[in-house]
Image: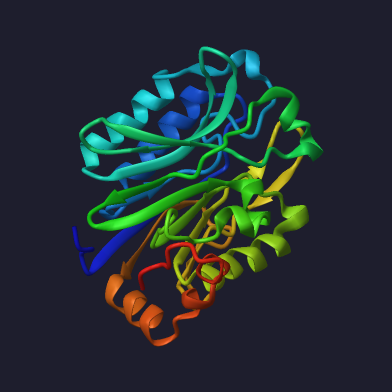
Length: 266
């Protein structure tokens, strides 16, 4: 299906209540109720708890916070994206869901676990990239620390997205990296890039200053939330993205093309 001309990308930025899923679900309810319409709503990493290693409190697959995402997707007729702490039959995952209005969902498990917080001791890493389509656009989601690994985010024939979404709990101590890496991912992949971060101080004392932002394929910021709490919406257009890929086709010189793998389409 051809992409529609415009896609309204929305995201929520707030001070996550530490280890309080119900409080965070209620906060999302209020923010969405006051928000303008959007085609996509993106929530931060581990939006229901904050970036916690307390895996004994992880929700099961299909738990209350996932069900809330289904309800919001259905009510607002939007794709809802965000990561949760999820216990599977075998382990615990930092799992990003993309939930559609009909209740179906796809998920991506965080590949790069943040060893400085010993995340790899508590969570199992994912091993697959995921692309999903919505209103004719191809979207991909990754999680926080994944942003530092450009090989994993590289747009290829098998991973051909138009919008790359990062959900995060990215601390103020390294906020300058967040501001540099997000536009870099947009530029090198000739795609829109959206990073959604949190505000406030978590239960471990780490400060977060937001800075959720949407960048275009040239690395230019389209909308930044700064340190404001609330719901934010920005429309993106497909025609300028397509025209830019065709007029400046760096993808033709990507390593995959040189190695004889299938080239990307514009």
